[in-house]
Each structure stands twice: as structure tokens, then as C-alpha cells.
Image 1 (cartoon, rainbow, N blue to C red):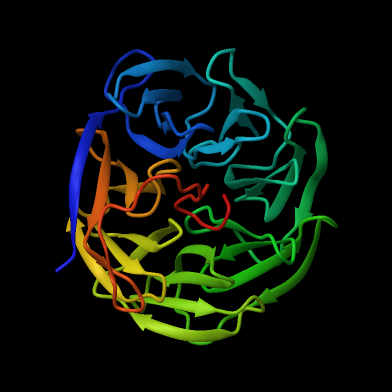
Image 2 (cartoon, rainbow, N blue to C red):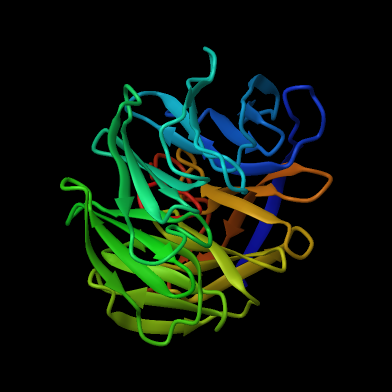
Length: 335
């Protein structure tokens, strides 16, 4: 039987070297270090090989998400919860953090595509687009039909073929935005979905976890349901795709792996209920290796490896982790 092994585990700390709650996680361009957004107003860079702190920096916002912008070699974060916060931040790991107070209330969800940085404004029902290199505002407030764009898990995914952004809205709606034109081009309510957990784009399809019905929903690029797959978990939430496997973290603290057609492979319980934060695949090691942040004290980031996964055609994969690049993120697509 396939299994998931928990390999390295390191404590996450804030800028004062106090234990801090790891939220968002991503990798730098060559995959040698891990960037983590700490809820105690900290951006943290760890050496992936040793877990040593390379550098950390204090921000004016309580951080929640992590995103690496490979073109501009910088790290983006959004603020943690609550109204009245109108700032996102970017940092290159060396210079001071640059705060960009140009967004709506409580930015939630972020993605960089085509040189543009997009974030959803939770309390305003809008999306903001910035120039990723300069921070200049391109679209201050694009209205998104319905409340709380990108809720519940801050998901923005990118369909590179059709140049569309996709985002979830609570409880069961999807919104499509034309990235080049900065316009909403459709809202969808896929059949049978109770409430979205996580969301991503993989192999030419939209994939979303249904947090109510404990399913994985496969849709075409017009949001028509193609298949609904029952999952052996409770309240599935975050999802990422590493090019070969889907990884899903549920509300009970269990991480599960599935092959590219959604067949269950293995799972591991690494935390307590509702302690999950984010999960991201390793950009250098490739399929079968992910990293996850843990939400409750003690705070840590941990590496997980799938051993003996079964391919859709029935073959077995062991240790094929080298030379693969996929800038996936817990929330999906090419984030």
C-alpha cells in the first residue's frame, strides 16, 4: 500500500525569535529556500535543507498568505482577517518590506500572472490588480458579483490556455475573470456542490473540494461538472497539484494524496482538528513531495513524501522527485 512519510519538521518563529503561527508557504525561484508568512507580522525565509533562518522581516500587517513572484524575484503576502486593512506587502528577502496600501478591505487570495498582481478584497466584494514590478494600481476595484470574493480559502487559479482567472465565492459559486481585459466574464454554480473548500486547475480541468459533501469535483473549463469523487476524509479543504498527485488537507488535520484522476493513494494525520494552514508542492524535488504549515502551538513547517503511489494506468512510482518544476500552491492553478 502507498504511504505518506513525514520527513523534516522545523519550528517557525517570528521576527523576535518567538514561536509564530505559520500561515502561507511558498518557495523562492530555485527552490532552495522556503518563504513563510507568520501571523505575528513576520515574513520568514528558511533554508530548505536545514531549516535554518536565513532572514526575517517585520511587517505592519498580520500576515496570512505567501506567494513567490518569479519574474520580479519577490515574495507577496496579504493581511490576516478583520476589516479596515487596505494593504498588501512585497519583499525580496533582503531589502525592507514594501507595503502597498492600494487594495480594498482585507485582501484575501493572490496571484501573479502576465506581470500583474491580483488580490481579492474580502469585505468589499472586489478584486484589485497591481503592476507586479512597480506596485502601481491598474484596477483599483473590479466588482465581483456576490459577497466575499476568493472565500473560503483565498483561491485564485489561472487558466493559461484561455487567459482566465477563476475564484471561489461562498458557499458554492465560481467567478471567471478575463485576465487581459480585467473583466468578469461569468459566474457559475456547478451542480451538486455544497460549499467550496479548496480549488485548483490541473490537466485542463477545474478541480474543487466540496467541504460539505466530502467530495472532489472535476469540471471542464466552463464549470460544467464532469465527475464527482467521494473522498475518505471529513471536510476537505486545501488542495494543490504537483504535476502527478493531488494533495488535500482536511479540517481534521489529515493530509491525503490522490493520483491525477482522483483515486485515493494514502493519508497521514499530522495535526489536531482545525489546525491546518497551507500546503505547497516542492518546486525542485517535484511530484510526491510537499510542505505544509501547522497552525497550532507548537508551530512548525513539515515535509511530506508519498511512497509507492499508483499511477492512473496501474504502474507504481517510487522516488521520482528530481527535475520537475511546478509553481503550485495550496489554493491552486499556477499560483
